[in-house]
Length: 149
Image 1 (tube, rainbow, N blue to C red):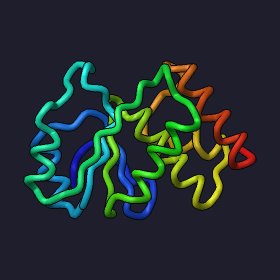
Image 2 (image 1 turned 60 degrees about the vertical axis):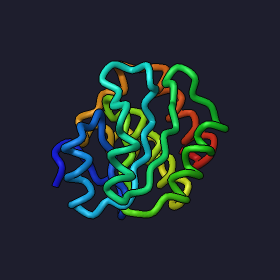
Image 3 (image 1 turned 90 degrees about the vertical axis):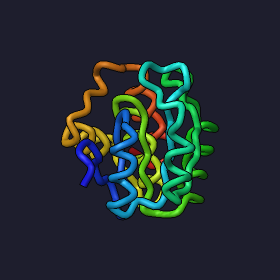
């Protein structure tokens, strides 16, 4: 198993920044696709990620998510990609906050989710949304508006 990948649901893993070796291991571990939420301008962005992933025979989508510009339509676009991509699916960003948040909203759409469940899962993964209060507020507000949080 790839270090730093957390299972948040059946066929759904999340991670922060990944290396080429981690992507190769993810493929060996059975992941069938990768959804990259990083922006190309982010430090450590792996420019050849799409080429690596597709060469491994996995599906790939790059959907940049700016954490300071989150909105409902963007969530719907990302969730739509998550629906479409073959599973198991690996979603990643730089630290894991965006990928975990989007993955939990995806799961929440399927089976409901409370704000406290969201925060419990984040804490269990070692993520600290308090460092990004605007991102935390967006995800919690989204949950409350759409899932009755």
